[in-house]
Length: 400
Image (cartoon, rainbow, N blue to C red; front, side, top):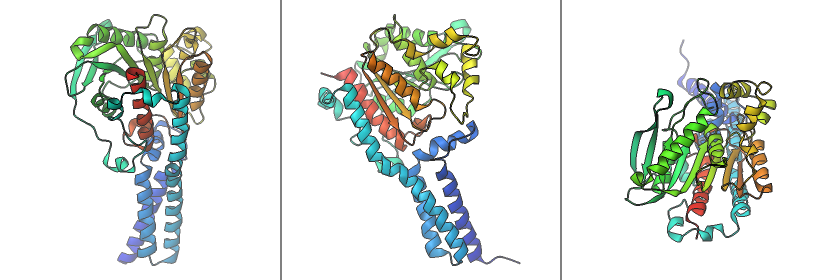
C-alpha cells in the first residue's frame, strides 16, 4: 500500500520545519560537548540563511499542506525558528550602537577623523551588510607565500605564511596567532581574514608555535617571541615596517599575543587585538563555564603541566592580567556573550584592569556570539568584529 504523494510531501515539509527549528535553536542553546559546539558557533552566524529556511517551510505549510494537524505543527515549528533568527537580526543595530560607543570611549570621539581619508576609503562602509551574508565579503588580490621556516627549536620546524598587498611597498606588520587550546591548529587558520587585511594595506604574518601537552608553557610564548624577532630582522624582505607592528590572536593565540606584547622586554608593539582570549587562568580554572564543552581544567593542566593547586605560580605567570605594571600597547578585546570556552566576563575584567591602569583599551561584546564566531567569515558577528577591527588597526597604525 502506497502513501499518496500529497501526504508524503506534507511529512517532508514537517521534517524541513523541524530541521530548521533544530538548527535555529542552537542560537540560544549552549553546547554540552565539543561535537555540538559547531552548531552553537555557526547557527547565529548563518541566521539570515536559517531565517529564509524557516520562512520557506512556513510558506509551504500555508500553501501546500492540506491536512490541518500537519499544517499546524509545521507552522508552529517554523514560526518559532523565525522568531529565534529574527532575535539576532533585530539586535544588530543596538549592538552596533554599543560597539561604536565603546570605540569612541576607548579611542576618543574623533578617532575616525584621525585616520587618513585614503585609508578610510578602503574599509567596510557598513558594520553589517545582509548581502554579504549570502554572497560573502569581497576579498581582493594579494601576494601570498607559505611554508616560510623561521625556526627549528628542538628539531621542530616552525613555519609562517605571509600575505602582502598586491603592490610593492612598505606596510605595517600584522602578526596573526591562531587558536586551538594551545594543542592544535596551524598558520593557515582564518586565511580569509588574513587575505582581507593584507588587501587593506598590511603585511600579514601568520605564525606557528609548538603544541601542548608535549610542549608546555612557556614554550608557546618562546616560539611567538622567536617569530617576532625573525619578522623584525627580515622585515625588509617582506616589505614590512618593524616599527609599526600589531599582534592579533584568537583564543589561545590571543592569550599568547597579549603575553608577548605585555612582556617588559617585548619588542615595539603598537597594539594587540584579542579575539576571545583567556586572560585570567586561575580564574578560569576555579570557575569554568557551565556547560564546559572543552573541559577547561583539563586544557589548562595540559598547557601548564598541572593543576592550579600544584602550580599556582605558573598560572599567575601565564595570565596576561598580571602584566599591568607598566604602560602597555592599546588593546582591542572582542568577546561573545554566549561564549562557553572563554566567558565574556574575563574580557570585561581585562578591559577594566587595563582602563584602571591608564592603558588604552576597547571592549566589544556581541550578545549572540559563541567562541570562535569568526570561523564563519561572512557571518553576522564577524562582520561587526571586522568592521571595528580594521578601524582599530587604522587608528593605531595610520593616525595623524
